Length: 117
Length: 110
Image 1: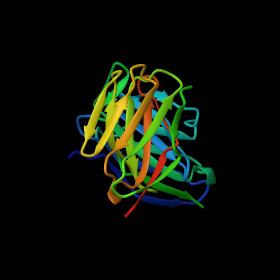
Image 2: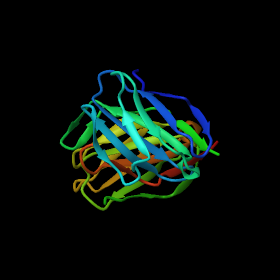
Image 3: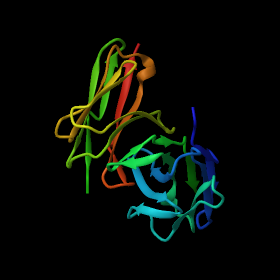
């Protein structure tokens, strides 16, 4: 069964530092996503990415965040100048395609737990 | 913006009992997804429903989407301890954007 792989599984960083969270989507998927889940809260959409550009982003995804697909296999989320409130589980996901507004073959990674101290 | 409401918030059942979790949307759903999550872990995709009236089953879990595409239910038959976890519904609002319910925490007592 193909998987979305995320690294690292845990990351501890000091406030103000930059972090890069890495994801390897499923190889034939075209759409890539980042979500986050603050402990005990809802899963929140951050950003979707298609054809090497951001296709949708939420209000959370401000200038502190950026995404990149640097080499055709990795998909990264960069968080600049981290704050305590950035502590959360960050999930990457990928999907095959969108058909009539819904995603198909949608798979989540197991997440990176980011702790900002 | 689209909101998803899940009910109940938590559920404790005896092993072997059936249970239902509901997910209600304020708007018509393009795609409705059910996931299972163990606390602090990743999301496991269970099922996707797209058409009004659609019903899908996987092992002892059945999910339905109503005709109006605004409500979905997840039904577990003869629950087992392995079914315990947090069940989340998610929906597509626009292409490439999605929202999630708060989750339903299921405990199955042996």
